Image 1 (spheres, rainbow, N blue to C red):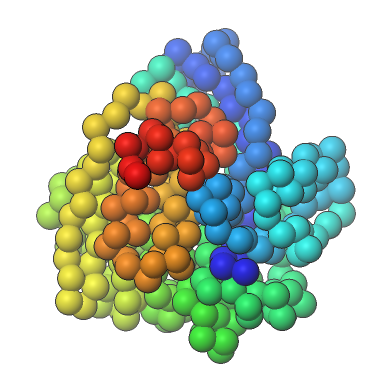
Image 2 (image 1 turned 90 degrees about the vertical axis):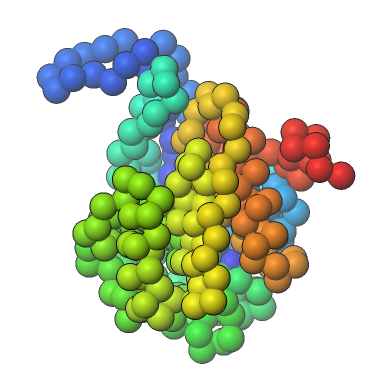
Length: 304
C-alpha cells in the first residue's frame, strides 16, 4: 500500500449561485449537485486516480449517505477495510459557488468526530505498510496527533494539511511532520501574520519553518505554490486557466503531490506536477468529479 489517508469524508451538497446572499437574504440557486467529498476522502481519491494504492481510515454514520461514501471509495480502488461505522449522521458539507467560481463551505463533522486514536491503532498493521500518512483537521486533534506519533514510531513520513485551520494546533506536533501544507488563508490564521503579498507569505511561512517542520508548502491558488526547507526557498508559478469551480483544488494538489512524492521521492518535481493537476481540476465542476485520472491528466496537460 502506498498511502494511508487518516481523516474525513463528507457528502458535498453543492449550490451554484449567481452571487452569494446577503445576511438574511434568500437567493435561488441556478444549479444543485450532490457528490462525495471531505478533505481526507478528496485527497485519497486524487491520489488513487493518479495511480496510488490508498488505504482510507475514517468513519461514516449509519444513514443513507454511508453506503454512497463506501461505494465511491470502492469505485476509486480505495481500500475500505477501515471505513468504520458510528451511530448517527455522516459528515456533510454544504458548498456555495458563485459565478466567479469563488466558494464558501460549511462542514458538519458527523461521524468524523468519532474517529479516535484507538481506530488508528486497530488499523496499525495496515497503516504500517504504507509509505506516507496524509492528515487533515476535519477530525479531532487528538486523533491527528496520534496519527503523527504512529508515523514517527514506524518511520513513515507524515503530511499534514491544517484545514480547517485552528489556533489550537500544537506546533510541537506539527514539527514532527515531514510536509506541512496550508493555503495562504490557513497560514494567516495559524501565524497571525498578513499574507497579501508573496513577501508576506514568505515571512509567515518562515515562522512555521523555524518551528522545525522539514517542508513548508503554501498553496496560493492562481498565485502558485511556495516551498520552503532549511536550504530551499522557491515560488512555483501558478497556471493560467479559466476556472469553473475551485472547490477541492487544494485537496487535488495534496492528493497528486502525495502520489508523486511516494513514487519518485522528488519533492520539487512532485510540486510541479501537483500544481498542474490542481489547475486542471478547477476547469471542471464539482469536487472529486473534477479530479482527472492519470490518462485524463496526461491528455489535459500535454504530458507524455
